[in-house]
Structures are given as C-alpha cells and as structure tokens.
Length: 211
Image (cartoon, rainbow, N blue to C red; front, top):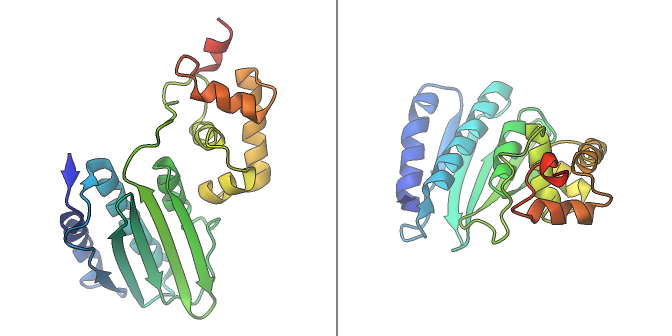
C-alpha cells in the first residue's frame, strides 16, 4: 500500500507530539511537498521510525535544545534531514546512531553525518522508493548472523569495505572479518565470486553450494 508523503509526515508529527509536548527538546517540522510521490508503506513506516529514533537519541544526549525534521522527495528517493543544535560532536559510529544506521542500510539507503562542535549535527538520509533491480534476498540463508546478512547485501552492490562500515556503523576491520567468514561459509575465493553467488537466486545459503 502507498501513503501520500504529506500524510505520512503528518502521522510522524502526531506520533512525536507526546514526546515533544512537555519535553526539553523543541522540534520544528519542515513539511514535504503536498504533491510529492506517494511512499511505499514499508518506507513510510521505517522513515517515521528513523525520525522517532533520532528525536529519542537527542533527548538521551540532553545536549540539544532544538531540532528540525524535514522530508522531501526527488521522485526516486525519500530525502530526510534531521538537524540539531547540540554541542557534542557525533559520527555515524556512535552508539546513539547505530539503530538509525542499521535501519537505513536495511532499506538500501545512505546516510551522511555532518557535525560541527558547538554548532550542531545534521543527518542526511536517502531511502530509495523502488527496490533495486538486482535486490538480494538472504533472509533464508542458513548459518548467517544478522550482521553477515547485512554485509552480504552490501558486498553484492560492489561497494568497498570502508563504505560498508560507514553504512553499518562498524570499522573496516570488522567488515573484513565478516567478509572472511562469508567467503569461508560460501566456499568463495574472492569478493567478486561472493557477489556472484549472492546474486544467484538458487544459492542463498552455504549448504546450497555443497549440494
């Protein structure tokens, strides 16, 4: 099902009202274009969850007095921006942002974090409205941890370990560790071979490679 972008954003405001009505954080909302492309239901739900998580993380940090949440749509992606006036420098590797990073990665989206000590932090998030043409389905993969499934999806897109780490909020060395485990479990010798296996609809699990 589809949700008009303005309606999805209005629901976000309603959901956040109990948190912001009497709390210390003042939240401003930048309305999306009324005629923007309708959002797929899962994207709308996750976008609201990401926005709520961002507000809750600001409340937990208690270093920001104001925040601004804005949505837009370029026809292919939902564009989200969350700004605050907190004085603490924040990066994508911070534990407070980890839930957001993982949600965005699960949607094949991207997130940039720009922070200036004493001036605040801006999160810029892009979430595709259409699934990628070569979407990888590994939910049924045997013997893979949730993190390995996330890494496998991103390896299949061809991006570097550093970019995978940035999207998942983990270090490049941790990504290398997961890739090594995936190579072993799938019996692959290279990342390219692993990506090829991952894109094969008949090879979603390590056991499928040994039959």
